[in-house]
Image (cartoon, rainbow, N blue to C red; front, side, top):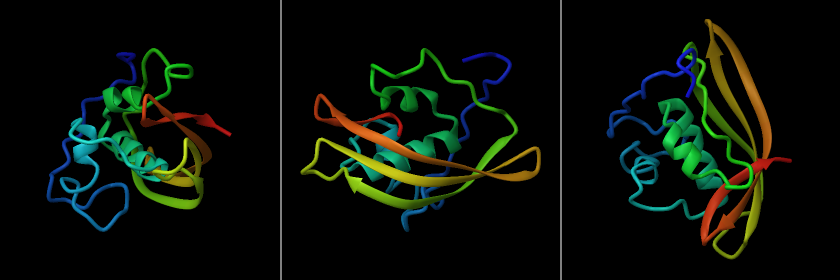
Length: 137
């Protein structure tokens, strides 16, 4: 990570609501994926866990869950950006019975006190049995 944009990881209390928006605590939801205790079972859950990783500044998890063909060498985080809410708009495939899927989402944030939104339709595939992010459609 670039020293200009790198930021320390944000420690999320395991009992706090999970940033991904599901009705569970962080410890019961995305933390187990981030800590390598389990793999996300669906493309949507991987998308949610990756959003939570952005909120936590967890670059190692993001890189680990990125397809090797499209994975960047490193990630830069904007230190003033705070991820505030995730909306899942639509999904296709991505279940235990699929080898690929898409997740369309809106990721809300604030940057320098101003609200913003990142919209994307992401493609996910299985790599060695695990869901990984391939890229934007």
